[in-house]
Length: 487
Image (cartoon, rainbow, N blue to C red):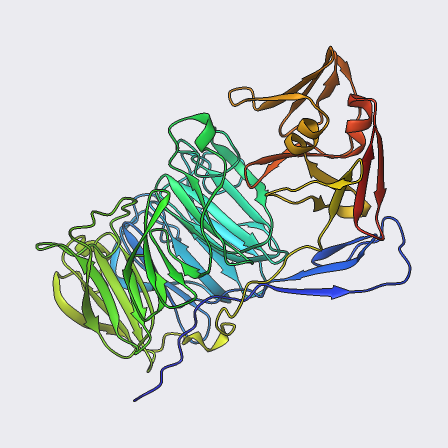
């Protein structure tokens, strides 16, 4: 049997450096210092070969140059015009990966810089405006990978943090609201991979857990929700388990559909034997039609081509990169996005010289722990959290507020419209606003250094704010990694 090297997903590596002394305010590259030691995040830059958006496509050659073709009504090709082309044209050099969205585009260069261009009516370019861009514009540094949705954007930085911006009408940014954002904002940490859909996002964390952002019908559904564990790679509609099983994401409920899968990209899957499969009903292929709900009666795989090492799909068309670096196109509609400009009943060779996935990291092997274990001891008893405390720069710490307030005997309420948490106990009323420094006790403000924020659907605050809230004593033992709360 011929063995084909297939890149699955970059590994999120975490290195823990013990240290005997702690200097307050010290920092570490791609990480931070705290009293436990130096926690250093290291996510390598991801490399891909091909990407298919709703109306346009990208290919990256072996010399790291980016080529584009398809429709160009919003300038999504990045060539400085709004004129489409059936023939691939060169856009820029030094590209590690690219992602084609609904009408905008994203590219990460080999130096980790992120560039965006195209449609911007919802701020999806991340430049703080709503102006369309016909050429690439630099947005941020230190980026490992990106994913462009219909009108929103996701970026994973090399420290494992997830940043999001653009349209948010389905809560797809994961910030707990439905308000669009025009600049990148941080959503959560410990992330290795993301996939942006139309009104939702999928997030793969370092521990192999899969999180669903968006698609909600109320304020309670707009925060990230964990939907499965043991995941190796994702697209916006599928997830590959670490056992090789392929799962279709039917809302919050994964549906197992196929076995022996090595990699999924958009709506095509590369199996462990190197064959590429699409999914179809009795009449139509669905290579990349941005579905989020899949009917159980019609998902079945159809083999498309063999000897595949990378693939992409979008707008009911698809692309396969073979082990010799050749690019093949297939599909049945949206012909403007094909390199040939024709309806293709079977895969057709487009071009040679594409980059092979040799630059990618090895297979995802096992769940990895992002942060050291930090304990919260309340009156001698350890509190249990589904979202653990999060260390910050300069020795600061953020702790989940609900579990602690309820342990203190307070009644806690969440106002999804105002994005505020309130707690009441013995005539004392606490109120804090997410995304701000606002923290009041019976109407009087208490200063806190770091903004209250939501991580994995839980509101976090600084521990010392609790001191001003209730009659308690809080001690943060940085070296032991323990927060002691007594009353």
